Amino acid sequence: MSKHSIQINSIYCGGTSETGHDEVYLVCQADAGLPIHIPSGINTANSMAKGDTWTFDKIILNFEYEVLVTLWDRDVSYDPNLATYLQSNDFQPGSGTGSIQLTNRNGANYTIYYTYID
Ligand SMILES: [Ca+2]
Image (cartoon, helix red, strand yellow):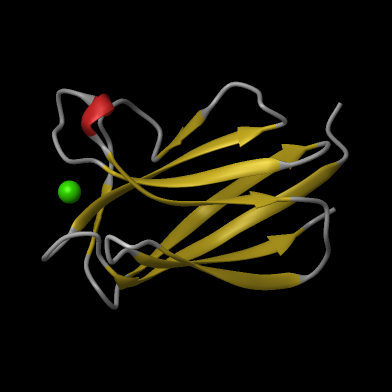
């Protein structure tokens, strides 16, 4: 029974984990439930360089306690175990619109823009 909803509006890349581009995808997990891969589909990702913004059509995540959003960099298409961890954020119930900047020692620097719907 989900009681809260958050919309992920966009992600801004302020730095990549390696030279050039990161092949970014998200894994979202509400209340430790089944992971949701964004973009949908296996081996899908969005190529991002420093300064890029990835805008989402409509990603709404429903949760009761928390929803964990993890950014990954897909390094090779044939093995998801070889992806590079970028950063993650655990969203808890809240309100309004905001952003959170995530940085990693590997150089990854991403900002998630979000809006609480409920
Ligand atoms: Ca990569």
